[in-house]
Amino acid sequence: MLCERCGKHQATTILTQTINGVSKTEHICSECAYKSGINDFFGGFSLGSFINSLGGVQNYSEKRCPKCGSSFDEIRENGKIGCASCYSFFKDELLPTISNIHGKALHVGKTPHGFIKRIEEKSETPKPKKEISEIEKLRLELQKAIESQEFEKAASLRDKIKELEAKQ
Amino acid sequence: MDKWYMQNAEQSDTVISTRVRLARNVSDLPFKSKITKKQMIELNERVKSALENINFGDNSFDFIALDSISEVERISLVERHLISSNFANNPENKMLVLSKDNSISIMVNEEDHIRIQVLSNGLNLEKTYETCNRIDDLLSEQLNFAFDEKLGYLTACPTNLGTGLRASVMLHLPGIEKSGGIPQLIKTVSRLGLTIRGSYGEGTKSVGSTYQISNQVTLGLSEKTAISNLSNIVAKILSTERATRNEYLGGNIQLEDQIFRSLGVLKYARLISSDEFYENASNVRLGISEGVIKETTISALNELMNLVGGATICARERKMLSPEERDKIRAKVIREKLA
Picture 1 (cartoon, each protein chain N blue to C red):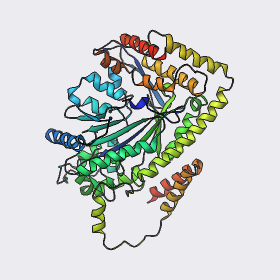
Picture 2: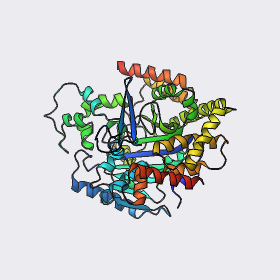
Picture 3: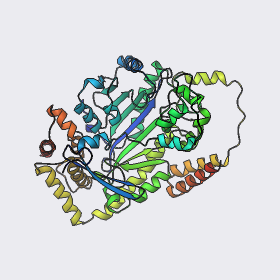
Picture 4: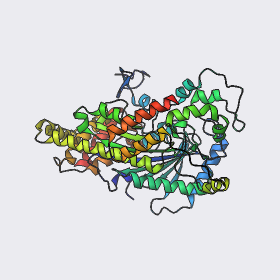
């Protein structure tokens, strides 16, 4: 049988996709399978549409990143940020999306070579300690639950956190 | 030097491989959507000079201009999980840095400026991350990475912000699959901020019972926490898998029959498609893990997985082959390996 997409080559792959419970089966050739990114170990999901839905209908087109010239519309369209400066320039527009993906928008991991010093120089006065919020408490509990392999508990804690985050 | 998939593996009865990648961008060049040709070439040069003089012993790096190799060679790299298909499809001005044992591959000018990837055989999360981290340190000494105190490493797509870390483990779960437990597993795992998917296709049915599980959240969690979360959940899945196998295997003559039929196909067939290989190799892998098959090894199967991709066969033969010609050569390679 010939490939149902290009109609040129012999179909070697049966592709079944289930989206929202509806299954669709296609017979395609290896070239078309490769082009559609099946078998791609690196595949993730595109965020373009995601940013789009969060950006609403506002028109941002007049504002452009001074460094790379990206407008927020461009970023929304392809789901990719133009350059490092876009993150500070479009901070207000991007932050809701970032919190939505990751929950917490504060980096706690590694810093690049030479960066630790820059922070130390900046923060001469130590910040007063903030009280731990309800969400942070739940996050700590979640961490513990995962470490002690109580996955049912962890899952329900995660749901609670999601709920609280949604209210914020 | 032995390729990574020939090296020692832990928990190889249930885990095929471990992968860790870090996404990085340099601060003074625009990201992929805005970068110019000239800047891409400049970035390749910068990465090359940062890594050129580092001594990795036997495991030294090759610097490959992606548009200098044929399309079939590029697809073969995708089949062997060394580059993404997106990277292979648009090779202009892109560079791949590949270690001799293929365990380290660095894509330059992919979605992010730099994607460092390290692969290991079996379950090996901590060490694999350590290697990735070391290369990141080395690059970081020479290149100024885009970084923000609050958002962490800045990436072209906000899904990778923070640590830029994606750690994943390729699992072999015939037990859970046969007992119908995959939908529940997918549900639970996704509620814990991880994703799991069939390794050779989307959705709940996977060719050869292989599933890839990886972390999803990269901001607000340290690298160590992300790795240990994944590691804990993988440990739990593996114990479920082993328990299910015990339940199903003991005296199950139908399953034993299936395992030996698969061994027969791999040892004697004259034409094998790649799906057929994966399905049968999965049964044989189960048979070896459970001590039913003693005449071949998991290591031989792991090696085969990296030898029998369609493009990999064409690349080795240095010509484009029809599907039937590929199936014929594939069958021969498998037969010889298992003889």
